[in-house]
Amino acid sequence: MSDHSMPAQVPDARGYYGEYGGRFVPETLMPALDELTESFQSALADPDFMGRYEHLQATYVGRPTPITYAAQLSKTLGGAQIYLKREDLAHTGAHKINNALGQALLAERMGKRRVIAETGAGQHGVASATAAALLGLDCHVYMGSVDIARQRPNVFRMKLLGAEVIPVESGSKTLKDAINEAIRDWVANVEDTFYLLGSALGPHPYPLIVRTFQSVIGIEARQQMLDEVGQLPDVCIACVGGGSNAIGLFHAFRDDDAVDLIGVEAGGLGIPSGEHAARFADPNLGRPGVLHGTRSFVLQDADGQIRETHSVSAGLDYASVGPEHAYLRDMERAFYTTATDEEALAAFQTLCRQEGIIPALESSHAVAEAIKRAPTMPKDAIILVNLSGRGDKDLDTVIHEIGEDA
Image (cartoon, rainbow, N blue to C red; front, side):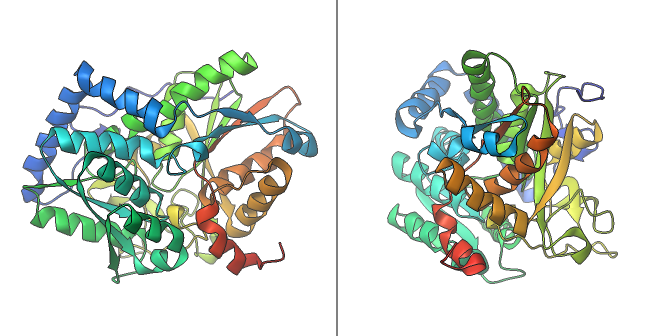
């Protein structure tokens, strides 16, 4: 059981989660963010909008996604029982479609026929392209050229779905730089363009919008645990890049004081190496700062310049984290740890062999934490892992890392 004070309802009216969040954007974007906030709140109160969203979640996305008992893995580890929330079984193969569909419907409601998005692992890009195709919207996806090289199947999927994939060659050529270019596009075309942001970050109201549309993960999982297992989990675990799948899982358990919430950052080559994307775990590089319109924990050098990051997982390879995660960590309502590339790759192979499930490399970081933690817990304890996506997209990376004779 966690020892913490219950956090306040967040964000406040200005989009702050304690000292984190807010809006740090050019003046030209402020009217667009005000319009987005008003339209979002109006849509939430509109039974027709929410009814259409929930209907598509059921008939197009395939919700609810199931919970799977990882029987072999639990038996092998000899401790806590492990359950998997199967977001990998959602249409497009990841949780990203929950938010992409909601925001695409919002774009349509606001009369914005052109949508732009950024993507790292490609899952948000595929989800955005899918939702745009469904609703007949014009879709443009910014993606770093390094990520394009390691996520080729998803690049092809986006193109098949009718989206334009725009390579980004600046900076580290990964997610951070893709967001930079998407924001530049939005500033230049704000009158007719909707920025479909994929993670629980960016200026207010984006972290709130993403949490709202992703909260279906935790709402379903909490009820499924009660109905199918007869109790809530002792621990919920999710990987954290920007943090959309984690905040989607954590939110429904936020008031369940006995449920520990564990986020897993990308430990890369290890914290001492400096080659990682662990914003909370490295006291030399991770501290509060502003990136992409919001205040949160950011990896930065002594001069405040944003550090380049490393992870074997493109979706976790980002220098900041959603502001609500920084707040939950401060309040000790959620706790954050890391898994290295090596640990994530080992967990990837373990879940393939023991459960017949190929997880995304992002999700493999959460599985790695469950593998570490389960043997230390009693056999009647329960761990719930959010399997945020499937790993087909990662096979080229895995072959490169461990060879074809795995």
